[in-house]
Length: 442
Image (cartoon, rainbow, N blue to C red; front, side):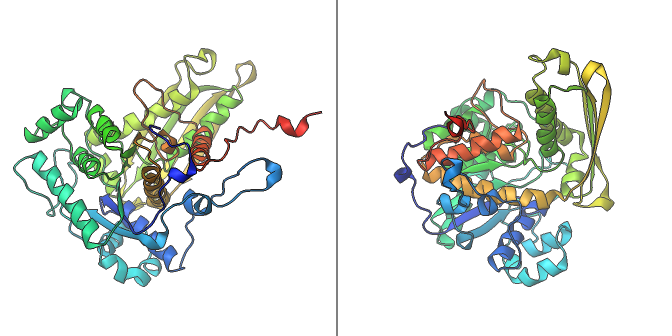
């Protein structure tokens, strides 16, 4: 957290309208937009959203102060949100939602008018980076710098046409191919030259991140792509006072790992191996059927267990454990992803035990409230004077961004404490340590 204020008075109020722009208007984005509109019309509850449903304890337990987060923190009201998107496929949000097959007609038809009015702007898109999608609603320009400038113009136009006070961008598009950071990502000068040279190491997601930062718009990366997490853009975000966060929404199987693995470590139980396999049939599954895109996702998924279990500190328990991840594209399953985990653990005197998890989850249903929370919290962070990497939002990501050389925290419960303590800090409340000795003083 860079440049955090010390006083509640320094947080600007959430006046006016907030625009939420999503690169990608597929299953996740349309489910998110439909859900928010459904809540606004009183047709459903915002289940899964901390900003809307969670409480936060303030002060001692005896004070009984536990307001809803949305009543404690000045967040944008759902009624003040305006949606927009980019997508290489020209379908409006209603058509895209129907094709995605996540939501049933009983939920889509009452808000058809609202969704049909959301039409995607032409996307920055190249088949080289996402080979399994072919779209016609694509930007053209003399080079990638030109495309980035077109995105910046889109942001300004969207803000003006809708009378917006502020904008946030949350990446909801597909996983791009695996890219390693290189010299073209080191400084903003090198990055801009690489854009002008149409360097093949400059992915479309980086163009959106660059455009967002240059327009003073917070950017959240919901995919495992190398995107805003390159030195050039991290430094640019700090210099321009823009909050950034990522990467890869923590939804199904990895979310369960960040719940179970801390439990094993807390009890000092050993781990021999963790085998994970997934089947899913949505657009994300089709994209991940390409080995280059799967490599990006695999890197994101594999990092979690080692970071939580710390085999270097606990070699007797975790040194050399086997961790295998598989993702299989299976069209009949659609957005209803199924994840199987076989966990071989070791207990007292070396006796083996097993944990089996079969999680039949709905990928976009789990992701949609994450999009909402990240947008609202990032907008809040911006108004609070926060800039650069927002590590306190690690709760929502598989591969949280951190300062250079700093190990990310993957334990879900430590992440939750970090998130809530950050909110307390920004609002001038004391941190909660859960020590509790004061209740037992003689």
